[in-house]
Length: 310
Length: 247
Image 1 (cartoon, helix red, strand yellow):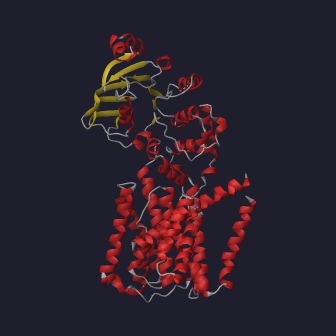
Image 2 (cartoon, rainbow over the protein chains, first blue to last red):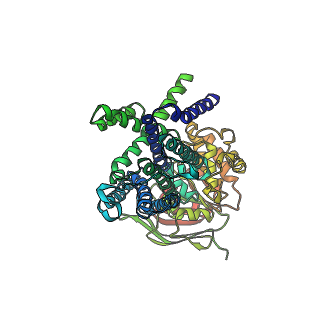
Image 3 (cartoon, rainbow over the protein chains, first blue to last red):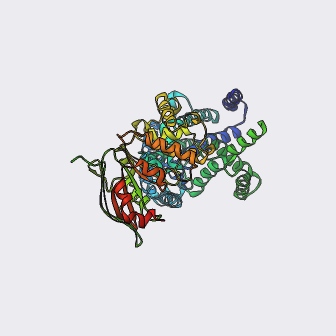
């Protein structure tokens, strides 16, 4: 327990110190990792704790990003209003998508989430009047909360780190709460949960909405980081990368999506420097992980450490 | 006339032509101990599944404490005071015994929607869960994971989840199945100690113990109620001997 606290303190300090010692390339890479962490952590609520595998989670990230960019650039709304609108709109979208997708479970649920996300993706491409289609939306500037400029990579990194910290803390609290434990109950034994008086559908729907909300937060970070949004963000590849992060790191664990998302982003950035077909390398690495540690890196390493201690 | 704990009228259920429940009518009074017997495939568990709401009947009605619940989802029936156990163990295998019972207690409390407070810090809930475990003799194992339990202990946990809710109507589906003689005695005592404020319907094949626990008996075959009445009258009935006890 004591060493664990020490590890946490050391990693937290190095995360805060990082922008003061590293170059812009690494700071930006770290920011991308953090955004992917928030996205994967939000998806983990569904995949890991509710036991509902979604392949359409990018819809919420992209939707929030588009609302934010659209209302700011096209309508000229202030950033705070745009952010609130984006999160409210994304939460509402998650409520609607959840109500549709939860008519099924298992593979059916996966396919419906995928189909719904593809609808959003298609709209972003084709509704040119609203989204500027394939050209994407440009001209977004980063906000200045409390008069602080987030224009430098270091400043934006620190802001992202703060929000990531909040997101992970809130999700950790959720998982240990009565609701979080009940949610895991509906994952493992839905029939029993219903017989015990839990409204399984409502528990799952709520989880879907919460997951959508945090994906929206990731979307806001994403769009302000890029200062640009293109329909490809809404593609299945984004959803799949998030899912890979969850599964590779270890679904249903708090640290899993953090490790997994970091791995995906770092591999993607480094491998793409050396080989054009970096996707193939990514695929190979994940096949290896699944072969060696079927339930993900975090549970796998934990088991190794437990074996060593014995 | 008092309001029955459970009233079933002309219930029908069939699976692709196979009739599992055929015009079943039953009336169970508050506090009664009813034993459901019948050969395998007689439709006993299917009847339980319709009472609990896991299955919707094809026709007929079900009343719980005077309220029509025929189309009510299972969780709503639980809130009316119905609890059940399963013939096939239906526990939360990754959790500890304490967590299992906590989930049972949470099912009926508004606090189950709390997203902020750590569940482990809910002292009152932990205490109540520990009491429920002690009731079935598992008090010392509260922090063990379910996977570490013996089969007999799992059977008792299965009952503890239902009992913890202090139900008004309890459906026990073969609580003695697969238990050793010693474990049977433990579970028999747990069932015998259930207060009369809880109505109990029991499916069981172990006649030595089950008949001892029952006030009344219903014999089912091919989904039809063959004999229905007080324990002694059903035992004495020649049809009981022919269909069931004769084997």
